[in-house]
Image (cartoon, rainbow, N blue to C red; front, side):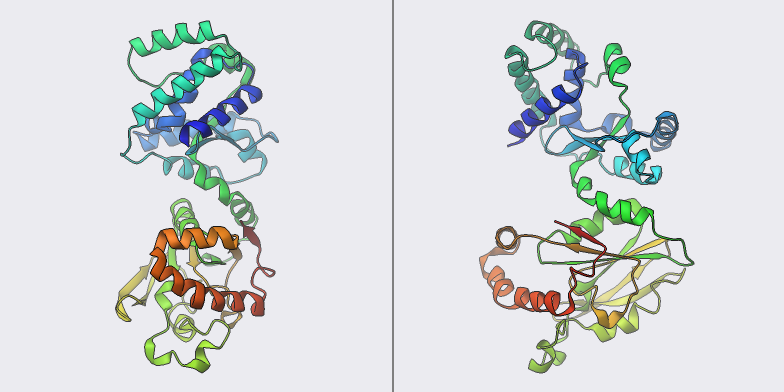
Amino acid sequence: MSGATFASCLSHQAVLHPGMTAQDGVKLCFQAAFGAEHILTDQDKARAAFYAEFEQTPARSTDIFEPISGEYSRCNLAAWKYLQLPPEWLFRIFFHSVPEKNGDRAGLFLEYLEIETAYADQGLLPFTGAAWRRYKESYLAGGVRPVHHSVSYRRREKPAYRIVKREYERLLPVWQRLAVLPDHVGPKIIAIDGRAAAGKTTMANLLSQVLEADVIRMDDFFLPAELRTAERLAQSGGNIHYERFAAEVLPYLKKNESFSYRRFDCGIMDYAGSRLVQSSNWRIVEGSYSCHPVFGDYMDCRVFCDISSEEQKERIIKRNGPEMAELFFTRWIPMEEQYFKTEQIKEKTDVVIE
């Protein structure tokens, strides 16, 4: 699958950048496999270089993301600047896109080289197969290592980008919404609601990294057994302890100070310690029912994560196993759907992510 995705990205790069040489082809393979780990060994130096290049890059309406593999994209500085998004957000995305220390990335790199060899031999790239083989052999003789873009590529294509993980691409509409929020005293609040297995937790974690924000999990407000009456569960959103959220979280969310709240662990059906929420400029509330009208308009940005019923089913079975998945299908999902429909959660949201 990774090879097929790289092949598709390679074809697209050849169309986007006809100035690509064999040297740039090797660079593409290296970035597609290794990301940008080699230039992130010194964070302060990497940040200084990023800001210097960002300052010199003219804003331009162009594709903001250019996928180069199933894992990575090139994020164009000119497009980020054109959208007037904070440069520090992009640097943090870049910084958090360092690959994990696992997998055979050298092997993946060699696989990508062979794919590019086949494409060059078929005349599908801006350079000949002979030129590719000469450069590839010379390169491999010196060992696997990063290379610069060719001088001709720099002159013609004027590359200015950073390598980022593709999982951040999905958040672009959220970044755009957050960038235009009016300033006010106290933290800005993002509420992420949506369907089960639609990626709410992943999105909250990614936003947390970039915004340096703590996450309040609605799962921590699972309804205790003594409150789980038929009458309570028949209510829209009645299966969360919204009274405790209103008491332990809402009064403190927009204050410039740390606070903590009790965590309820549904695995043991009892409280299990507390979660500390640090003082910061942003805070994230994540989980189904986070936009329940009983809480009022406490958030500055509402995000709804959507997913098709077919993909939702596949993800839940894979994530939770068949036995637990059945409980989702027969109990939790119908309750969520009732809540979404009754309260028109998706219709009232600021950003829908599918």
